Length: 77
Image (cartoon, rainbow, N blue to C red; front, side, top):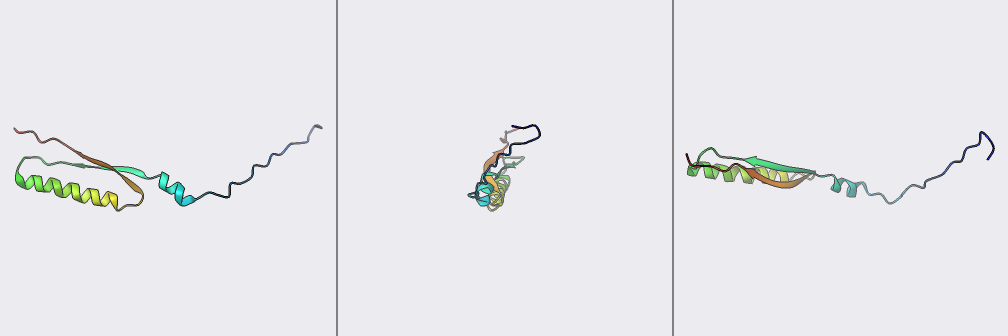
């Protein structure tokens, strides 16, 4: 090769690239934290309402993947 000449390598494009498929891979894992402060019956229904609400909010977002519900354990005084 003479001085000053350069070799160029051509890398062909990959025509089969699906951006929608790539977007499926990049979902954000989302979890909810739910808690109640007492063992009263009203608080237990509040806890279930929190779980239901956050589960549905996470599940309906196409960019999120449901990672679970995390909760504190209620301890008797």
